[in-house]
Every structure is written in C-alpha cells, then in structure tokens.
Image 1 (cartoon, rainbow, N blue to C red):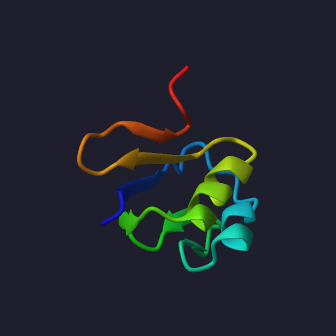
Image 2: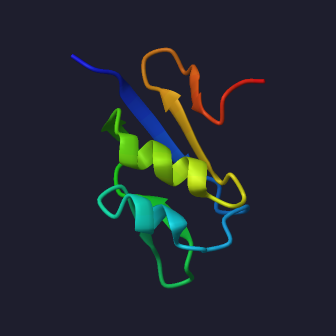
Length: 77
C-alpha cells in the first residue's frame, strides 16, 4: 500500500493562476472567485498532484504525509 497525502491550499496566498488545475484536474478545482481547492483533502500519493504543487507560482499548496504529518511539498529546508 502506498502513502496517503493530506493536501491543503492556502487561499490567502492563492492567486488563482489555475496551474494546479492544469496539472491535476482530478485533484484541484477553482471556485467562482478563482481560488483553488483540493477535490479531496486526503488522497493517495499522486505525481500529478505533486506536479501541481510544484508548479504553483506562489507555493500555496502544501502536501503532507497523512500518517506522520511529514512535509512532502514544500520540502523542509
């Protein structure tokens, strides 16, 4: 069994670029105010969701391991 992720979008930081939806349309949606939302707060580890987080121009997307809370993205420095 693979890792499970918790996905959050900081809507105070999100600028509504839509890059996340472009990379992972099954993982993110934009609301009427063009703010990103994960389609599900918990998901199986997914390369498209990781690519979406990495492509966010303002790093508004955070991914952590569900079990431990360890950061997946952005990585700890």
